[in-house]
Image (spheres, rainbow, N blue to C red):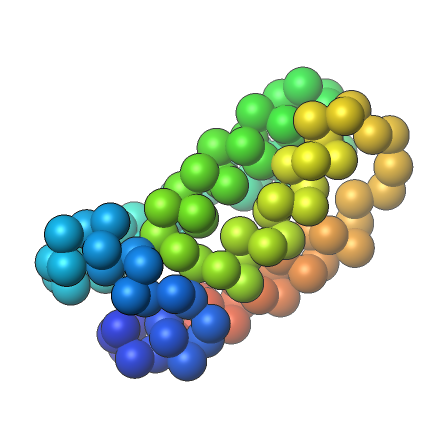
Length: 112
């Protein structure tokens, strides 16, 4: 079950995330749950698969904003690296970053 304690154990900075939600725990947990139901990561993957670095940058940048606002730090760290590479339109194999993101995301989904 998704709780403040389980998110903290996973690595989220829940104090910071809660502050952004005016310390409303139910709102914060609802926003995290909404993020987990969102498919914006799939947009990033598809754009990278299609070598659309502009689209991939937009998707990564949007994810970075959401993850930063929710203080989902383990995912935020990975997506920040990807965002900066895409900002510079770096042509490379992003599969290791995607694997790291997916492994970290699956640990978060497991506590849901």
